[in-house]
Length: 550
Image (cartoon, rainbow, N blue to C red; front, top):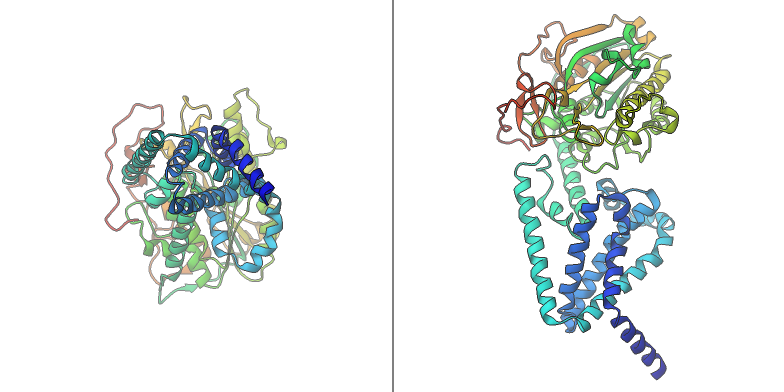
């Protein structure tokens, strides 16, 4: 016993003399998964906050309450690291809202069955706990009270600065619906907690939208002669980079061959320049001026299910983090929703194959990654076809071509049945020559090219043979915010009121105003925007959404 006690004392003494090494090790281990999944500025913020936190906690370590607080903080830091490290190690991904939702929804049996995936990470996690614990202990014994006090003051200043900055940003940023607490936690070594806060909010929102009773007394289905409806929600596709719309490079060989079987929208305009706002407005009655719970609940996925369609949502964007909110809420109104961790969009096809086996009428949504920045990562090496010598231009155009290939693969699965595809991009991209990747979206000072997107409806030959279809070009401007009305006509759904917002209806008249929203949730008139990002700034007037909008 005396020997054991002496050994422990010797170890403690040796560790204490290396307190700076222990501190550095603790911080670096916490940053391990961050290095591979986040920008450098994120890692720097975490490192600063982590170091100041450990130094501040060491000031109270020597008393019993201090040891308890130190243990709790060490355990919390360890839990954060365990979650982030396991996610990176198993999935090669940052921890995000979808993972948080999965953890919140799991049960004991499922947790036990999944434990084998993460068991090999336990030694690293345990090692981190003890390194962090001894780092705090050693700091308490070897750092003066003045230094500890300065550390505490700097920590309070750091948290105050980022809390105030995020509070100010929250009032005007695109992500205003993200809780302030989640945005503050993002700048701390408890950053995974941010995703749990968002996940809880998203789950509550999805439940609220699901519980919202969308009641149309005269809701009914009219036979369309089509069995399979597939919506492909594209990502960051510029209309001007598509051969279908006159682009010089061969970016859309499949879609260009669709001309005789499709209704093509010549001038489609997205309602927002970011996915998180654009997609909910495209699929629901929400619009830039009326972005509310009741409008979001009144979405095409919900109505398709109510009128007897089997509805399924298949997404490649489940691990994108920022796209998991209102989109998830709408997706959750379908009978089946799944978010698949993919490298390329073609990995969604097996899930589509399974969905198509369902009997009866089907409404299936495929939410793809498309040509989102960085476009070079959106397609395999075998799809690296276009080569002009401009790397990032070629990357983007090859990504557009790979989306075209994906659409072709979907069409192959539908061509022998009475089926139809609606494809559109969520938003466009602006061309910024100053950026390495050239293309961007969600800016506060937008141009028209941020909203100019492709859209078409394709019909299989059996679908064309069963009924007369509207084919050719829609020459005028079309806001994809009206796709809700368009899809009602497309699916044969009647709400009991005249649907003159659909171009498929005889009573349709092109609107004169096209409101669009930028990354700061400012609403502009599309016609007043400058043509391109490089065009002179017009200082276009803008307005905020109506009171009551989320």
